[in-house]
Length: 296
Image 1 (cartoon, rainbow, N blue to C red):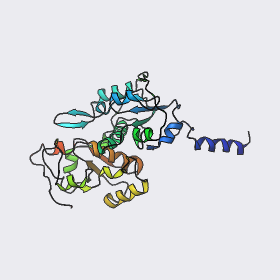
Image 2: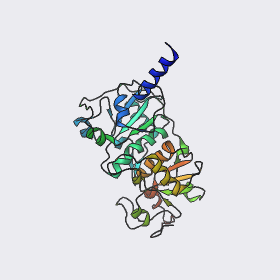
Image 3: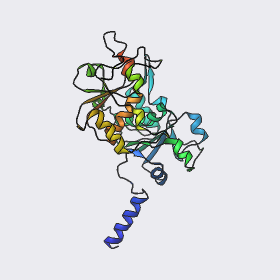
Image 4: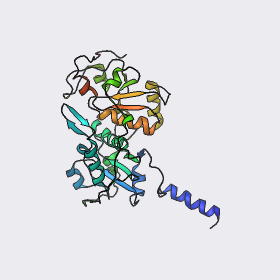
């Protein structure tokens, strides 16, 4: 075959998304996923409740509900499971070291919107390099009347061994050290101290924290905003320096993990850590300060 003919075939393949073996985009479109459903290296992970999964899911998707990726360890919610437990979840979902994973959830509420990027972030933290989430989730897939299945998908477990990327995680000492820019991923009323969620004992923000709500990553329909718009928001708050040391927090680590995923995997910031225990942990220390009614 002439080189020109081969080039045309490669370009056509790129257009329909069938060049397998390439690295996975950070955010997956419904069209891309539809075109790649038969990719043998792809694993779709549906994190909705089992009942929702049984009622209808993307063909080939396995069920691994959100609560298996983010567990409650009282007094903390939404924590990364212990290594062996998370390893079992990943293995049972049929995920290997080189598997391309697309996480699919719902997008009708703010917590649901960040659940999928939170799980994608967790997979990266576990050392699974190719993990992404579906833009618009099942809400968009259903709205577009794309193919659905009610078959219970069973896959052979893998024997992958995970390795926590500890540089992605921060703790209270990292916050109090004062060397990193502290970023609050909650909505403004919680940052300002005018509101609080029931599972956090006190309102307010960590002193010195800047505000970049993860909810603002999404449009009203649950799809992700244009990347240029997200980047402009990020630059306006944390600056252009992609090597800046940052620690992200929220109430329980749910919102901040979604923001961490976008900062790292979409915008390319290199030194972003996530304080998974977040304010639930912070307020347990009577010496840890909180600031109220202050935008600075």
